[in-house]
Image 1 (cartoon, rainbow, N blue to C red):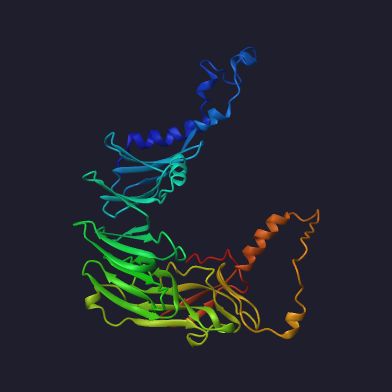
Image 2 (cartoon, rainbow, N blue to C red):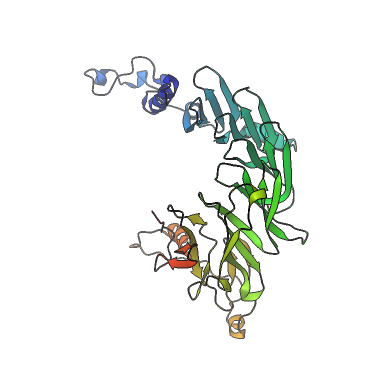
Length: 421
């Protein structure tokens, strides 16, 4: 990749901003260690920096280069609040800016760049006082023509691996749980679009094509589901349709396998439990696809789990680097009468429990008493954080799909265990 003078100067300038003497100190400010420093450091030659001086300071962050090396993006953040995203063409003086810009993504061919942007803090306050919309927008820039499209309310966005399509989601502006919205797939060649409603998440297959998996969630009693959309062929195929909840799509980088969490809708102690479902051989055009193989990791069917453990939602599904195993987290199965929590969301109290449990339950608010020993190196706030961290610890296990075999990798639950191979 050719070296661009601007890029080198910009990076060095970032260091200079942190090490240079502020201009407010005036010309001829002495360097400490020089022979006459004692004679020239009297208060008459210096002034105290004020809050207004600090507010003028800026810092550079979030650098990224386009795949072809022609465009550089970076953000200038002001100490006074607010930031500006800069998109600069390195072989010219062309610069495009966006207020409160972030989340820059380039297409694989480098022609398109997408980013999120919104009103500045001052503008946001004015809009809120006027009762107007303050939603962030999706910016889409054609780097060849300079044409820019702004879509208010669009949030998550991803380019297809073949750089022909952009998928993005509009969240609902009122009602709902903040996860469901309208998914739009835009053809970057002709500008045509295809929309799907009630979508919670989506992800492109990593193969060199345009196969999109997405999850739909209905609030009207209709089944939830997982679908595949071949954007190039315009074909749609359903993978699952049931009253279960689906979350955490995870594509295998080779082979076209797709994994997802599946949450049951039972009652009592059997309600709200997660399992893992995997579809195999989803690569290639949908029209040529044979019925995919399917595996299910759950205590009541398919590959069994170690006694007393169940699938945990606290650890995201991840494929091993060798691509031959799916890494999952396991957690202790709740006992009779215990509550089952879904990662802080949709907490469901389990029914049941003995009469003794009810009688022993204290009435009123518990006393707010905290005891800390001076020899304890962790203060009470840190102990609270560590307690929440330890509650979400999981036992890492590798699910070898070819053998349909689950192998726990550690003896004790941990949040810090990762597989390096």
